[in-house]
Length: 112
Image (tube, helix red, strand yellow):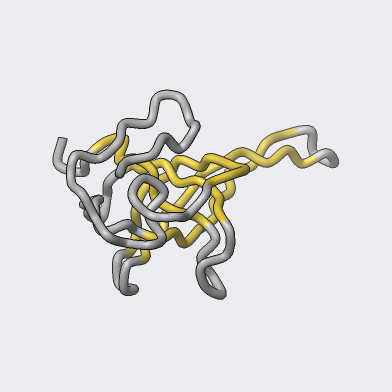
């Protein structure tokens, strides 16, 4: 059974999975923020780390500075990712101590 996650523009993966933490085939509900970033690490089991770049306004100098943040997210069994891919992740309930996001879509592959 495939369910709609309620986010427009998200394509359901063709591969089926039995992961209970999958937003498409399991019981995990998504909510809140959608973050896009580049995958920088796949060293943890079923978890990826993305790096997100953003601009921060410094009021004292009336200028912007570049900052970045890293965020961990769960990889469902039906998704395939590599380091360097650009992905979209979305907030969900906490899955572990550091993971409260789940992978929704691979926007751009690293080798393309």
